[in-house]
Length: 258
Picture 1 (spheres, rainbow, N blue to C red):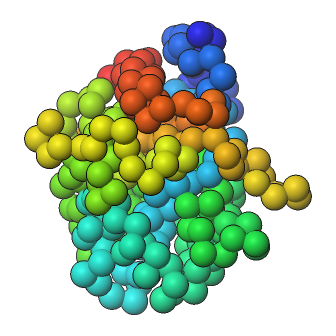
Picture 2 (spheres, one colour):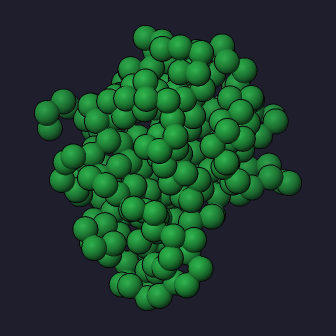
């Protein structure tokens, strides 16, 4: 278990100082960031690029809302419905969605999927720092209707995704409400070993960890934006990654003063 130094500083992050220590599971690539009231409270490698998995659905939703609401947005945001995301992705120009929204929001480490995988929206690239920017855009600059639509659905995130994975890892499991979350998972197979029960890379591109599972938890907790991205060792089970990410999220949040 690696011990990671947590840093904080000015809103620009120019003068980091030691805050606490967060234990990072061996063999797991981890980035995280907690932002509140104009300042990054804690962070670890916030500019490192990850495969987005379903976190990119935030940009798919915001792009669609510039054209108008759509009934596919609810299940895509609440229950991470992949079919809904794939239809909006196809309809609105695939990778052009990411390019448009990255330009509008000012994302610097977010990019469409590799050219040879244009239909794989979950292979888009992003970083913890950029995910913080997406939530800041929602809170500070997005049109009111878009903000209320997206955050309203994320506040009602269902425990079970439409693919029967339990998506209450990380923030929902480790932290108290109020929260609004968009989770991401990929590389654990088409179905979980234990179905959820309600109530219970390219040579010249970024290293997206293709072939290894990713598990991400992102959202707004009270007044804080919380982002924890992980690339798991090959062969990691969903239940193991679920437990590790949930514990890590609790440590990160406590280190931020939460």
